[in-house]
Amino acid sequence: MNSWLARRARALKTTTAAVGVLAVALFGVAVTAAPASASFPSCGAVTLSGSSWLGGQGVDVHSNGVNTNTGVSCGSAVYNLNASPSQMGQGWQCVELAQRLYDTRGWHSGGSFGLPYAYQIYDDATNLGFTSQANGSITSIVPGDMVVQGTADTWSSAGHVDVVDYVNGTTVHIVQQNSTSPTATYTLSGGTLSGASGGDIVGVVHSPQNTNTGGSGGGTTASVSSQVTPDGVQHVYNGTASGSVYDTSWGNGASLTTWQVGNVSPAAAIADSSQIVGGVLHVYAETNSGIYDVSWGNGAPLTQWQVN
Image (cartoon, rainbow, N blue to C red; front, side, top):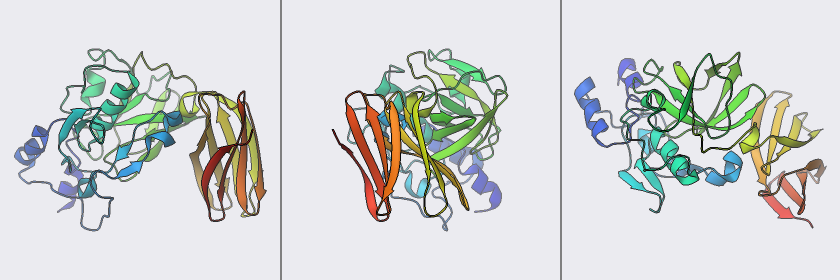
């Protein structure tokens, strides 16, 4: 596959099986797989669990198998939240994730968005009952919002859509399907988003039924603690009003990383403290209903339990 076809391979993010046929008609070649050098999880494998993002209120992200980053779906079209696994669209395209999340959370009714291309989510936002903000004029972005790529996207003339997980300062963390990584980040500055995948961010789409506010995982930061681990890496642990607990780390050669380590919802994490015991990191999240110990590291798995 030449470089031009590789760029076009991701061209048709869609909710219908017919678009896969359209790709053949448009480009004169059937794009059936990612480059041979790529290695992706098997078709339908869960690459990010729903409980690990959006404050525990996300949905599972599935792999598009060897078709990852292409407009070809490794799975069939299913529009049934009660299916096993739950699915709302072509398996497993980027639009399917957004549709499944929005229907699951009650942010959209009526099944799929009914659009053949991802970029049309922004264009048809009003008809779908959503609001939109053009990139360059973004004044608000909250967990659950959709970030939409347009027709001039670096990889796809059909665009791309991902979902905001949480916002930490000027960094917008997103979750996406049918992409090499299920997570990525944007930078928001002066009302403009930049970064992540693609080069044509047209704007942000919001559902009025999405009542999330603030930054991390659907809630504003309610508590913070910090420490430097023996490897010289700085860690900041923050608990949110929605009960999510995050670890943000950087320094001593480690890149800036944020991940969710715990979830004590529906209670708010009103106070945090932390310590290292036997090389294992412990973050203690206090809520109105008790204290939780979230621990991991030095060979110990990520574990959470209520202390009292």
